[in-house]
Length: 266
Image 1 (cartoon, rainbow, N blue to C red):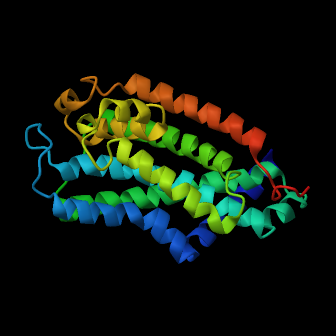
Image 2 (tube, rainbow, N blue to C red):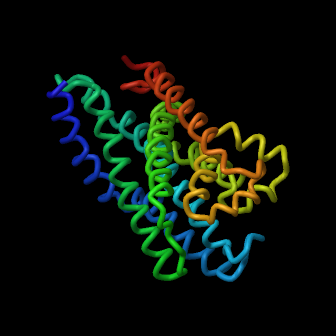
């Protein structure tokens, strides 16, 4: 186990270097939430969501942080892993005496570090340019921590599992980006969730992003703002259950379907 963790830590550093050296990946997965926050925050700076003095920018910030989790984990891995599989990187790694678990430790560690850097940048931009009020209660920050951890784990495992869907690395983004966009549009990221049709709300409830955005709103919006939620409550218990189910389910599916070589190859 010590060897697995030691090699895994080395893999984290390697994955981080590769992630930030790839300009397209950095823009697509790391900076996109910040860019969207600046655009939407500027356009809807004075718009309110129907509760006291809470602006749409404050509401949108929670959605962008939740989306950042989806970008750095699911989207990043579901695109990068097929490319590594196609160019033979995974097959070469599988042939090394390195414990296979170390590879996944590297991916998970990279996702967590990238997310921490990303969320700090989002919060700094939100506070400096849009005067967003950060929570002061330790309870809110505790909620932020466990939601982030469960969200990152669930979306990471789903991304690893989904990485077997693209047959070619070059076409991975075409199969991943639409999934992310659909989830964002139906999960209350770009729109007030209760303004969406009921069937769309029900559809979004099947996936983790809806629960991520809802839980993040409980952190960055006033407690009284939960009255604008569909259930009239933040439903943090259900958020934890939903994310927990996706974490366990994603892990089990990833274990079963992950491939080290392209289809048709051993």
